[in-house]
Each structure stands twice: as C-alpha cells, then as structure tokens.
View 1 (tube, rainbow, N blue to C red):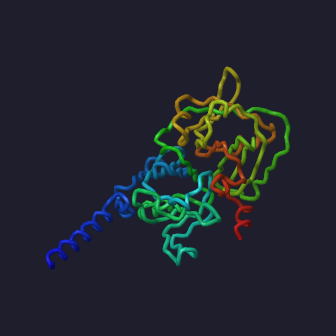
View 2 (view 1 turned 60 degrees about the horizontal axis):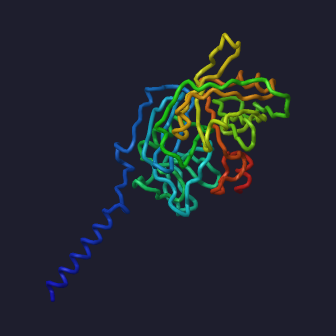
View 3 (view 1 turned 120 degrees about the vertical axis):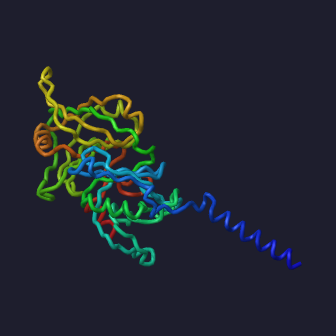
Length: 317
C-alpha cells in the first residue's frame, strides 16, 4: 500500500509539472535579451512611431521611418482585450504602480488611454496575459521610455506584424474647395507633427504632442485602392515633378496589410488651399501619417476611443 501511495503521489507531481511546463505556461521572456532587438544607431534622431500587432504579439519601433527596435509583447487576454486603433502617449511614469490592481508595479509605464491602457514592463509568456496593457520585456521598456515623448504615435492592429516596409509612396496635396477648418497651433506650439486621415470622417487631423491642432475636410480616392484597415506612413521629403510642376510628398509605409505594400501608392488629397499652405509649411521628414477606415473621436468596436485627447480625459473622470 505504501508503494502504491508513493507511485500515486509521484504521478500527481509529474502531472502538475507537465501542466506548468506545457503551452499554457510558456516561459516568461520578460528578462530574456533574445526577446527583442534594439539598434538606435540606425536612425539617431527624429520622430518615433510604435506599432503593435495583436495577432503576432509583437511590436516595432520606428524613428524617421527606420526600424530601430522590435520585440515580443503580451497584450490583453479574452475579456480584457487590448484596444485597436491610433493612440498617442499621454504621460510617462518610470515607477508607476497600479491603483486598480493592488498597487502592482508597472515599470516604465507609458499611458495611451485615460481608461488605463499603457505600455510597460511585464510578463511576456508568448500569449496574451494582461488586463489590456501591452507588456514589454523589462530592458526593452526602459530603452523605449528613453526615446518616446508625450504625443508619440502608437498604432495597434489585429493584423500581421509589420514585416513589410515599402518606400516611394507619394501623396499630392491639391487645392480643393474652400471649407470650414480649424487651426490652433498655439494649443501645442512645438514638437513633432502627426497626422490622421479617417475615411468615414473624410477629415485630416493634425496633432502635436497628442493634442489636435488642426482639422480639415479632405477628398481622396485613396480607399478605392487601399483595402479596409489601418496603415502608417512616415514622411520622407518633398519631390518636385518638373513635368507636372507640382510638389509630391514622398512616404515610407511601415505598417498595414501586406496588400497595401504590393503597389506603390500614388494618391492625392484635395483640401482647402489655405489649410494646404499651412500643412506644407509644418510637416518635416519623420512626420507620421496614419490612414484608417475607422472614425476618429468615436468609439471602436472594443469601446475604446480611436484617438485620445482632452475630451476622452474628461469623460474618464
């Protein structure tokens, strides 16, 4: 009987060990240097953009359109899914502790929604495991914290990882009809510019440090060529077309469905000439452009704002 008891106990221990080392309990790679790459010397200056793929549980960091880092991540599990959309870093706290989850430590936290979603160091077991935040390897979170700022663009999608980077896309800003637009650069006088074009809104939004400083109606045939989804571009510079006597803005695409990269984009944005003049004077190499088939300043399917701002901050209080 004693031998049978020992055998049964051993079986239970072995079974528990198998469960703990099985696929449901993957190794936490939070402190594994193989979980990420970091090469800031590839692009030492310029605006930063972060892209996150929920499908592949990966993230990438671009500076001036050049990838300087990539990493494994862990996002929200079922019932606490990480929201998709276009966000901006709202505030940073390298020694943050959660008020919601028992004062839990969240080192190098970078908040992207007023509802509590943030990028921060945390468990990275190879599958979604957070309550909605984006967990990063500890060393990577520290490095990322050092290159971002309030207003840095963060694009989160359900799509494949952004392994596709395509160059030479061009957009021509053309004179359209006069329209009602807003222009308030004094709300955020300095810093890199980000732009968002929303198909349902038919508007181009200009942001600086996460604050909307301009909005203008836009006409374009872009979505007749681009399939549904969200794509991110980085401005490379102006190119003069001597034949047509126009200036085209040249872009590098760093995120979006693979179908978006198969053909070089040659598109036009038609907008109020006055806004066009202001726009062309403010965008510089490294400026981010996000093109989306989702509405801005409205709720997404996951009930999170696509674009964070003062309105969303007020609603959360």
